[in-house]
Picture 1 (tube, rainbow, N blue to C red):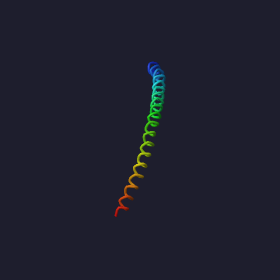
Picture 2: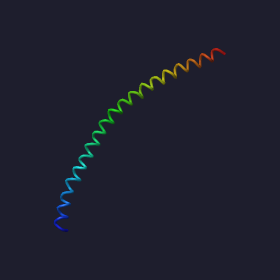
Picture 3: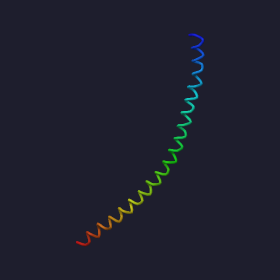
Picture 4: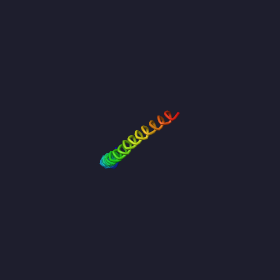
Length: 70
C-alpha cells in the first residue's frame, strides 16, 4: 500500500464514523416524533372506540324497539 492510499483510508475512517453518528442522531429524532404522533393517534382511536360502543348500544335498543313493534 502506498503512503497516499494509507492517508486516504485514514481520512475515510472519521468520515464514516461521523456519518454513522449522524444517522443515529437522525433516527433518535424520528423516534421522538413518532412517539408523540403515536400518542395522538392512540387518543383518537380510544375516542373512536367509545363512539362505536355508544352507537352499538343505540342500535341494539333500536332493533329491540322494532322487535317489540311486531
